[in-house]
Image (tube, rainbow, N blue to C red):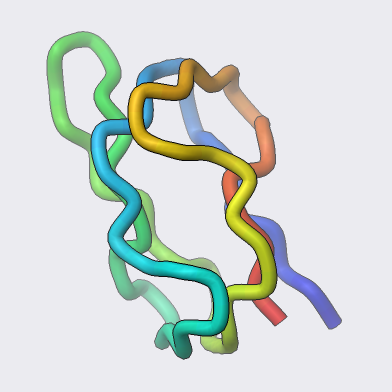
Amino acid sequence: MSTEVQAPMPGTILKVLVKEGDAVSEDQEVLILEAMKMENPISAPAAGTIKSIKVKTDDKVDTGQVLMTIE
């Protein structure tokens, strides 16, 4: 079963901290989202393996946009 990591707010991707195939634990930081001139760490909602990453550094994202998928 897949879990989606979604953007909690609109912003710009500053840094992706994982790559496809990486194992992650629940609440591990997976990327940094810049919004309102603040760096917001985005954490994995569940443990698993990164199946796909749908964004890259400097991408603009909207609230609710899928950033990556964890299996």
